[in-house]
Image 1 (cartoon, rainbow, N blue to C red):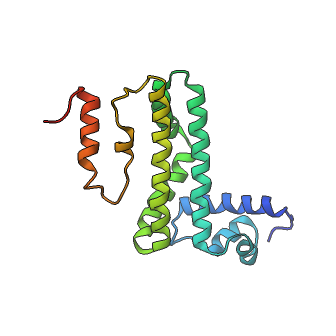
Image 2: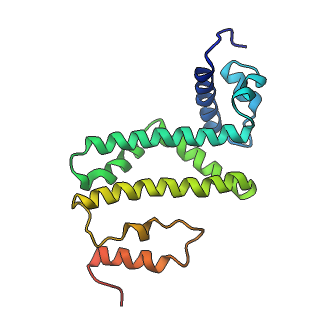
Image 3: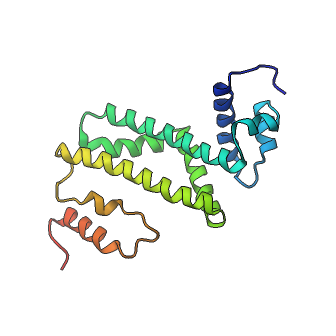
Length: 186
């Protein structure tokens, strides 16, 4: 075990970093808290001082990687002087990332799969995906306010993430067609 005593906040951050990598490289089900503790150089009781359960640790990893992605996207937006490039630059930064994309992509896929059987993870992911989508919509609306996205484009209609959205598709399709063609659907 580790002989270095870290302040609680630093220890928690180190455990989270180790756990995010372990879950991303392995899987939620296949990675044990013992594996994570061993990789972090601590005992399981130390791990459980910071996280009540494996699920809480996994959800903390999702939050941590989402925070990293928001930071990366914020930097991409700040570096793009043209508001019309904000969303494309967000996409480019995500695709080119050697750290955030693999981590959050793997964790999202695992969480979506686990959410089928674990109602806590399922509820978290529903809310989390709303938050991610709302972030992108806010960026789009800022670009729209700057005149980089046509005012007719209904970003709110494109924001809806409610189940499979069958009842929302007509509004989304109509907004998209108005944006693409400049006219309403017949």
